[in-house]
Length: 440
Image (cartoon, rainbow, N blue to C red; front, side, top):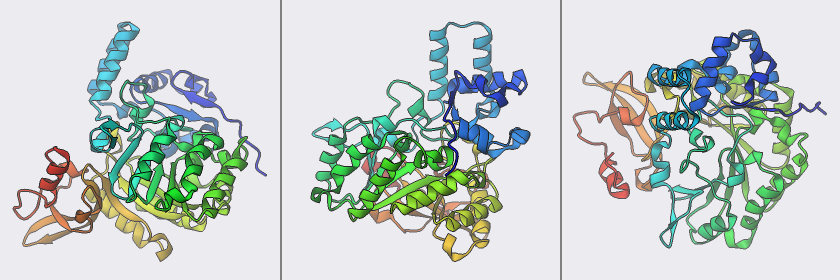
């Protein structure tokens, strides 16, 4: 049995207590504190002691993945904040300034708040999202935190405490009522934050009612989590670790598929004894583990990193699932990788692995209209273009229909693209407008 690492949480308020941080230059610590005013920060003893390479922290991907960096804010935003703090601005005014900066960072991309929240009898069901016909997302309020925060996270507004920014529901009954009346839904995703910060008993209250005969249409229950990377002891030695694994086993024995959607961003997260044991325990409980990550500059923007991750994941019994493009929110510019570069990295990494790893799809943009898969770059008659298709769409009829965008070496998101071959619009744009009332 592994020796349990003592769990200590570090936030913007107490991160100077981290022994390794105390050894850094004071100017660097102050810069980190300033950035953490805007982008939420949380880490823990496992990340700090077992994942970060403090001998090379400035180039270490796990440090960049979890600790604030000066370049995560624009010069304009950084300097506005720096001057305000230096002038001794009062707390309430500083909070207002911070929130204004946050609102300029596109806090809820892809229409999460405007387009994805369903209604019953004219009442919005906050804490539920239903974007694709077969899939519903549920955000349990007790799971709206994480063991540590990723600096790229597209759901960073969940952790800021800003009014109206959190997607969460404390009512499992609302979820069951919605699912009971939507038989087209076959797939439920529990997300956050991270549901693995919840106790096993609270998670059981959400999941167990869905195992009875009223919910035969729910075939798959997914749990989106970073816990394998940031706190694998959740499944090894936490007080209710055995209860959590028993819950997984109960779902599996019910005949439903339990898929643990593990977020791994860099090969370093797969190397500890703890993560390997945790993966083994989850799989032994009958759950499959699928892996996914965005492609991120400074973290994993190399084919060797991706090939290494996929090989390690397959060796441990996990299923490589997605390479995403980083969403257009928060510190996107710091992590930005162009569509062209992402495609080339994916293709090279894909060529380095066996067929067992080639379950992975990418690069994929989770944009307002749907999940857009970048299939390739080609040239006809002197015109270079991107080949794209929907893996998922707000209208299921869009799925697997190829469309073409003009080649743009700087483009990194769907909104950067325009149609190729003299077309005025992509084939889906008018329908998207009708469905959402938003011009695409």
